Structure formats: structure tokens, C-alpha cells
Image (cartoon, rainbow over all chains, first blue to last red; front, top):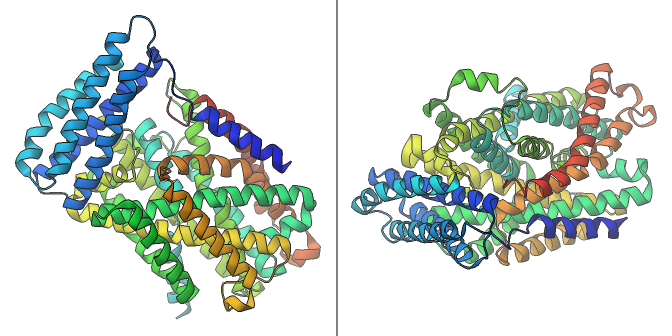
Length: 136
Length: 407
């Protein structure tokens, strides 16, 4: 009984964490939504920084986490094989994830600069729109 | 004076209601489905009230904690399966909670994450070792009350109150029914997580509750957990009002605190971080002791947090080993938020093994004398057993089909 539970647990962990392999339309949509989410959250954070409504530690650490997640997506989307006909969109999304990552890194490096934060708001908004377009 | 003490206990229970599972699932559910799943939180909160009252009553009348009942009522083999599954889930939850503590400290201080894991571990060890237990409950419970900032944030975000009200009526307007079901199961699993009843009943035995304390048990369970559910509503409303509209999927603890920062600024952020820090630290201690209680009760060892460590050495070694194991797991770099999702879903699978024995013992006159379940407790208890079995059977298939709530 105990062994069966352990095997089942392991199987579940393996099955549910499998998201590598070929990028199909469904995966493209899901990853585009992730990029959009990161850009949108980055925009909220940048807006708060521009108004002096956040703290240095929080901005530095949280922006770093988001930048890392965007960078991971950039790497994955740049390397993974794709279904026929969507390669260009997948690579475009990879570049977009990279752009979001760099913008979030700027926020991480200048966590108290209202000027930097203000200058990032519009680009991040644009990234959300671009990612949403790819998600459709 | 008695009323004052009861009020303090209730405040501590409210602040201690939310753990990392509630934080992750309530905010994510709000960000994905808006207010549609508020009714599930109500069902989960009523469920934990019903079964906490039941196992508190069992503890008060028979002097038996949950795992005593498990061992005596379901036999050795099923009992062992319950023990193994509960210990695995406890360890996963403890790991996620300690990771959550370290993340909160990092977001507050900016120090490196791995140092903070060690600091969090040492701090938990010192607190558990040197602080009287009623003070641990109070300190972390009152600190957790800072989470009420999410109630203020929810109001300040101006949600559509009509939709919020509609969320308390069961309905489903989505093209992703599987995802909806996954979140419903996760919310119920988070609200009725087994370690809460292990801890609650063992605490009752340790505090030597007797039949005279049954009223206090009822008040604690109903008002403490009931009002604690209010925090869950606030978290889901915050998720719905802010993140759904912006298309944000909360994948980090920091995202959750952004829900308080955006409407309330720095003070909102700091209160949210401090509230999560205390709530998650308190839950880590509860989980730590639950693991030690379960093993000690199952194997018939001496146990108790009120005893000197030398009076219950195997109990003390068990929680110390669990703490070291959890710290080791956090150090591997596992993502606490993702681990929380797994822990909640696996705990949902283990729910019947926890709640069925409680229900059986609460109806057994040889244990309970004249204090067996009344009609209402039996009707609700049976209804919840049906719900729990459905959750247990569907949790893992839903997790696989939705890729852990990603699709």
C-alpha cells in the first residue's frame, strides 16, 4: 500500500511537471499569456515605484524574480522545436520575453529611481499588448 | 476576564487561519475566475468548523487526539497508510511554509535567499524551544492579523460588489470547467487541510480540555475559523479585482503582496509582508508539531509540547528531524509556491483518512458517552464526508489534466 502510494506520487509529479517538448499552438498561447502576465505585473510595479509607493528591497527582489522567469521563458522558447507554421511566432515571443526580462532588470538595478520606473511603464504596456496579440 | 481570554483566543485563531496554501489558492482562484469561487470558500470554512468542533469534542471527552483515533479505528494497515501520506504532505507543507518565510524575509530585507532559509530555520527552532506554547499561538496569531490589510485593499480596489455577492451563489461561467474544478478542489483542500485538525485536537489533549471546555471549543471553532474565512474572501476579492483585470497570474509570493501595495502603497505592502511572515511562520510551527504528534500518537510514544524535551525525547527528535529535512529541501531551490500547490492537492487525497476516523469516534458512545454527535453534526459530517471523498478521488486527475492549474 505504502509502496503503491509512493509510486503513484512519483508518477504524478513526473506527469504533471512535463511541459517540455514541442511548442504547439496551445503551449504558444499559454507562454504568451505568461509573458503578458510578467509584463503587466512589471508595469504595476513600475507605476508604484514612479509614485514612491514601494520599498527598495521589495522592488529589487521581486523585479529580479520576474526578470529571471522571463529570461527562462526566452531561453525555452528560443531552443524548443515548434509545430509547423508557428516557428516565427514562437521565436518572436522568445525575443519579447527577453525584452521584458531586460526591462525588469532595469527596474531591479534602479529600485528607487522614479525616472527609470516612469520610462519603463509604456514599454511594458506595449509588451503586454504584443504578447496578448501572440496569445490569440 | 474569561470573555477577554476567549476574545484573545479568537483573535489568534483568525490571524492563524491563513497559511501558504490559502494564500496561493485564494489569490490564484481570484486571478483566474474572479469572484466565482467564493462559494467554495464558504463550503471549506464550514467544513473545517464542523470537523474542528468534532475533533476538539473528541479530545475534550475521550482525551484522544486524531491519530489515536486513526490507529484505533481503521486498523494498522490503513492507519499506516494514513500516517505515511500525512507525513509526506506535512513535510511538503512545512517545506513550502519555511520557503515562504524566507521569501518574506528577503522581500523585507533584500538579503540573499539561502542565508534567510538558515535564519528562518534557526529562528523557528529558537522560538519553539524557548517560548511557552500559548505565547507562540498568540504572537503568530496576532501578527497574522496584519493580513486584514487585504480586506482594506479589497475594498479600496472597488470590486463590482454585485459580482462579489453573486460569487457566493454556486455557478460556473467559464470555458475551462476542468480548471474551475481544479481550483474548487484546491480551495477546499487548503481550507480543510488535515494538519489543522491534527494540531487542534492534540492541543486540546495537551491543554487537558474536559467536558467543561466544550462550549469554549465550539466558540473557538465557529468564530475563530469562521472569521478566519473572511481573510480568504478578502484574498480572493483582491485577486479578482486587481489581477484578473490585468491578466496577471500570481506565481510569486511577491505578487500576492502587490495586491495590497497597489491600492495602499508602502504601508499596505509592509503590512501584507509582515502578515504573511507571521501567518506562514505560525503555520510552519503548527505543521512541524503535527508531524511529530502524528508519529508519536501512532507509535504510542510519549508526546507533548508542554513536556520538557527530556520527558518526550522521541517526540522532540521527530520535530527536530522534520525541521532539518524541510530546511534541506528548501535549500535545494524548490519553488515554495509550486510546492504549495502539490502539497494542497496531495493533502486533498489524504482527507478521508483523517476525517472518517474522527466522524466514527465522535459517534462512538464508548468514547464519547453522552457527548456523541447531535443530528446537525451528523448530517453536516456525512455531507462533508461525501464532499471529501469526491475531492480525494478527483484531486490528482484534475492536477494532471490541468497541468497543475496551468491550462
